[in-house]
Length: 244
Image 1 (cartoon, helix red, strand yellow):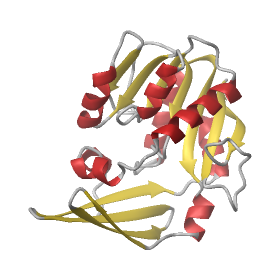
Image 2 (image 1 turned 45 degrees about the vertical axis):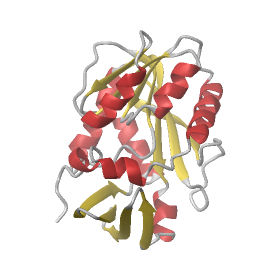
Image 3 (image 1 turned 135 degrees about the vertical axis):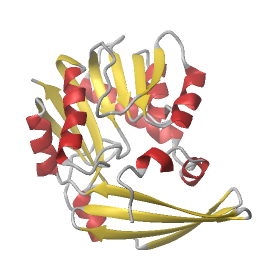
């Protein structure tokens, strides 16, 4: 049975970092550069990355000259991210539903499907309200999410991976309103099982939630090259919304 707060333990394990170690740093940097250009973000702008993980997108923003803060719930992720801290790059362990940094930002980002983990609509809306409260007037929020329609239509039910002497058997299934990923791990010292459970929000649902939180969507992109979103073919759903 899936635990309500599966994300509090899975993201903090060494297995999570091992499983997703192939993440493309160059792709992340190119995406950030394209996003900054698309949004015409001014030099020296203040940016907040919520669900920042180990900081790869925050580091890309920092390299472009922005003042960047990142928050994440995972202690190990924040510990690693803090190795890169400077006076213009800071990381804080915090829950995206309740954080309060006491400052406002020109841009807030939430990338790589770091949303839709929670059990209630109130929790999801709490995240967006926290975002709105940390944006300057006219500031922009960017939410990078999965394309629910494409994911549902092209679900890969089983996948096997090997990394660092560890075997990962991954099974995916659809439940009402969710995609569930069961991850069974085998290594010399034993076996472990973890679960990811993400809500399948479509564009209309995300738009309604953003609007309810005081954020007005104005652009919809379908991939990290910022092509226009197409519900049938786009691998991602990336929304940009302005604080109103």
